[in-house]
Image (cartoon, rainbow, N blue to C red; front, side, top):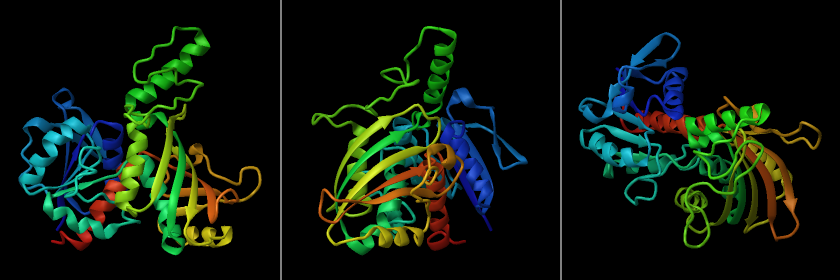
Amino acid sequence: MGYKVAVIGATGNVGREMLSILAERRFPVDEVVALASARSVGKEVSFGEKTVLKVKDLATFDFKGCDIALSSPGGAISAQHSPRAAAAGCVVIDNTSHFRMDPDVPLVVPEVNPGAIAGYKKRNIIANPNCSTIQMVVALKPLHDIARIKRVVVATYQSVSGAGKDGMDELFEQTRGIYVNDALKKEKFTKQIAFNVIPHIDVFMDDGATKEEWKMMAETRKILDPDIAVHATCVRVPVFIGHSESVNVEFEKPLGEDEAREALRAADGVTVIDMRAAEGYVTPVECAGEDNVFVSRIRKDPTVKNGLAFWVVADNLRKGAALNAVQIAEVLVRDHLRK
């Protein structure tokens, strides 16, 4: 006997990826419902290779009888409809930022803290972390287990798909416009994104950090360890899919490069490609469409005691969003919702 699963925000980049991954991984569904705003009602989205779903109106949908909802419609919409679905008995796995720091909502990366999923019963909601946080903590967890992390300094290189379809369209149109000498339009990003980088993701906070940078700090501490100090600089780059991160870690105990490399190779969800030669590392182009988090350029940082640096790359639409949500659902049905 399978489950009735609703995908909220089914016409967006992440929603479509959720539908694709549910089919790829043969999630035990009896029925899948695609939900979006009224303007998308009647549109068709694919579930697997053979099934086409017609989008229904989220605002009027009755969640009674739904077992699980995978939600990625934007924070304000999720704030309204995720509790409504939860109240109807549906367990919501929410990909927006709205519930992440709620103390009664578990924030989960299955390779890192799967036990936290049990806390879903307080609100019937489980939060999916920020895309850049997910790939970083997947790489940090096996190292934290053996040497205990004190401090992380990270610089991110985040693709435009993290800003949705509009971000991808803006990069494409600006790039095309440069070659045909059209005037550039800035609508999604604050500055030109084509052939440029923008050290500004989300809003600025009082201390000068952006909200995206704060998310990486707060979420890492909630997921992995509240004693870890994190400092982040988050940058939007002209890449369509795939986030990259330069991560510098200070440990409480000594940790050699080879030991770190072996721990990462043994970890679930991690692929190590680390050859000190041309092409001996992974870039966003190679990680697009892949499920794992890729780690390269592992090396000692001699400027601090017990320091290591490495490069982390992942597909932000898959592991950074849709795949992580489906993996949470898989643990949920395996350990908590078995029919």
